[in-house]
Image 1 (tube, rainbow, N blue to C red):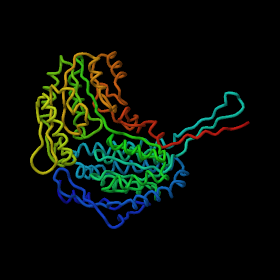
Image 2 (tube, helix red, strand yellow):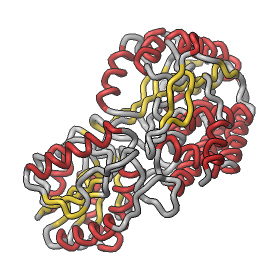
Image 3 (cartoon, rainbow, N blue to C red):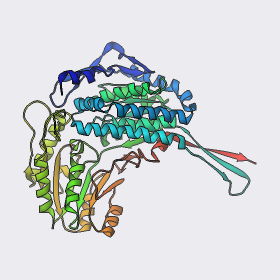
Image 4 (tube, helix red, strand yellow):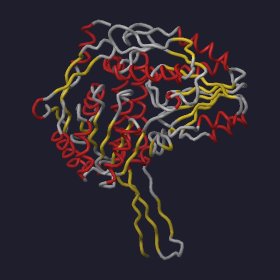
Amino acid sequence: MSASTESGVVEAVGNELFIGGKWVAAQGGKTFPVVDPATGQELCHVADASPSDGVAALDAAVAAQADFANMAPRERGEILRRAYELLMQRQDELALLMTLEMGKPLAESKGEIAYAAEFFRWFAEEAVRIDGGYATAPNGAGRFLITKQPVGPTLLITPWNFPMAMGTRKIGPAIAAGCTSVIKPAAQTPLSMLALAGILAEAGLPEGVLNVVTTSDSGGVMEPLIRDGRARKLSFTGSTGVGRKLLEQCADKVLRTSMELGGNAPFLVFDDADMDAAIDGAMQAKMRNIGEACTAANRFYVQRGVVDEFARRLTERMRALPMGRGTEKDVVVGPLIDDKAVEKVTELVKDATDRGARVLTGGSGVDGPGHFYQATVLTDVPQEARLTHEEIFGPVAPITPFDTEEEAVAKANDTEFGLVSYVFTSDLKRALRVSEALEAGMIGLNQGIVSNPAAPFGGIKQSGLGREGGSVGIDEFLETKYIAVAL
């Protein structure tokens, strides 16, 4: 990949705020750098919004809300459909942009662009399927008319690990439902969202419907908007700790919320599992996005009769993964997002080894530029190790043996999180028993990937509130209104 090609895709993206359909500089002209995590070098600078810029974005969303809510559902759907087509047409350029700012290998970035685009196609079709109802009152004296209307202006906050898909997963249903929005992408990866704003404008989205605010001061910009009272919904994807703070802020104005928060996914392998499928699934569930995913397998519980074989084969696969900058050919393990991420993974691995875990491969960071950590497998990891309770967000697979089904379920559920769990077994009855017993919003049964735009994504316990995607995803952006009709 030539330097001119890389600089070209970066320079093609607007680096200002997108407010009211226009590109505008931040008040005071402040900017902050966007850094390539594989090299530590600056890619560019983007506008650094102030609280006043955030208010201007909300002003634009509020001003556009009434007209957009009255737009025909078909028209809203057609905007999303055109945006889907533009995303797919520009998949290569957008993938390179994502790899430069986030670090994941190009092949994964291309996959994310396709995944992100699919949310627009899905919600383009859902826009015309917003339904209601008509019923006779039980006493026969009247009628019930049920209709659904847009919630209103929404605040959207997206993370750095899936900088395009987490945006389309929120923007798609908001547009389909008739809601305007202010979106704040993560400071580490703002370029993908700025590119998306340009694509939606090109697809015909009216001015003010989507407003993008990039900032290095997330709390300072977003808290005033939450407490403003004019926004009627907040949708957030990020850590549970930040989610708790946002929920407290939303309580002040009783904002409707949907939260996709942290995970601590257990990966259960029983003696009767298809070992080839289990290893393939483990590699998908662990190494997708370099392990920087809330759905990543965080704890591997393997029945004692097959734990040695599983550990050996997983170690062979992990050890063979090429590491490097995501733009390089055949690279699978790219950099982590920043030094803090490397420090956390290093601390978690050291804590586990101090408690008796053994390193089968990897186990350390990499000297030189960029934020790299080796693909790592640990075995004999005790339940009290920190990485069995904390989200790793890196390429580390900790393996713990178990003896009985009951023990496996108990260990899997021993967490405050409940986003996704993975189960590998050839016993149908066990598959159903365990899937029903696991405390998670999603189950990967004999497969290592659960994400699909056509399915409801979300967790229970402290992994979040509400669902994104699927036929219920649009409901998060709709209010139900009941009209009592006298006869």
